[in-house]
Image 1 (cartoon, rainbow over the protein chains, first blue to last red):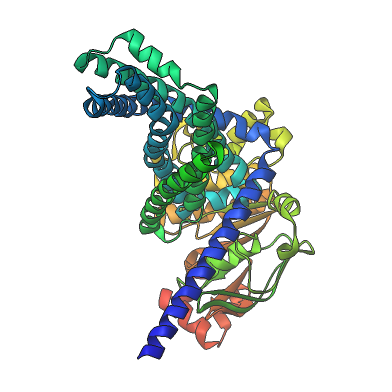
Image 2 (cartoon, chains in turn brown, yellow):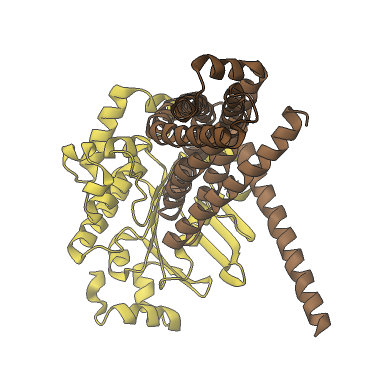
Length: 263
Length: 250
């Protein structure tokens, strides 16, 4: 009994390792294929502009809304915890830092993993199961240049841009909220925001958003591209794309914080 | 000329193609027959390099498809038109853009006056109304989608045309229209064609030669007359299942 359990565990571990290695290999090949297709600018450029508009215009409202609420709640909770013990201007410091360093990029990325990642995986998955990707290949055209590169580059361009808007909305909402419930003046908030401010913080936020954009778009396109078995496969790819890119965002968040903030 | 030698393809533990030997000569139309699920579409996709075989070779004009690099494969595919079972039209594009993608020469693809003229020509060739080019695939009937798929396949003036079940899912009237269209195009364009089908009636009407795929192998290749006279058990079984009266060949 013990032997058979050990054997099963070995088999499971072996299968897990092999599957993982196979996925990494295929993902690497997928990315290499994408890089090769970058030369076909006249194919991907117009499609990238359309995708960029779709991401930007379609996601701006929800990104601003969620960031504004996150900023407001951060400000209110900071005010609640620090009242009476720490100067009020610290609220400005904490709200600005929390939003720009963490909440702005991470929340935006998680929202877009659901919104853009799911859409890309479902679109490409449907194209795979209805043979549209095969049709492109049969016409001697590169599916990477037509379908993957425009989506990935549009994400790399627009997700950092949306993060900047999210940061602004979060800080502004935090500022207004804290003014409504605490005796914090504009001068206090601005003083606090500037006290620990380093220009690197803004770059750090954008760099993180850039990495998150890469993980959302590449993982989602990869999952969609490798969809199998009809409608069920499309559903599975979509779920896997959102879950994988969300987990990767959190892992990257930790790694980038360690690397870029030298903690 | 298309030559397939000892082709083997497995999916997991299932062997779909098990030593296929198959040949298509210049200018002829070959119908690849067989019951559903016997690997006809897999064979067609292997010919164009969309599926990699586990064993065996596919030669087109003397070139081994399995050994071509990305650029060579792309160049080869530009000389082959592939008609997919359900059209495989890009649903985010209108018919004009769908058919335009079939123009595989990049200089011609960007020459808009040429593109307009060529698309109008192929739309006319497949008997579709001129205003179809402004419609999206979702606005077309099944038969029209198949014809747009054929228009896209011939837009680049290919040397070879591969049809994957061009009449499946159509009513008999539309199936006859598509069969007639395939026959006419093959004669007018002088292409070499392979048509995968399980519609024996259509195959006898359109093809110069037939090949029957069963249990992963080609069990017979020959003219329609040779098929009718064949004593091969699998051939008889396949033909008799579809026809009570062999006079369909007339």
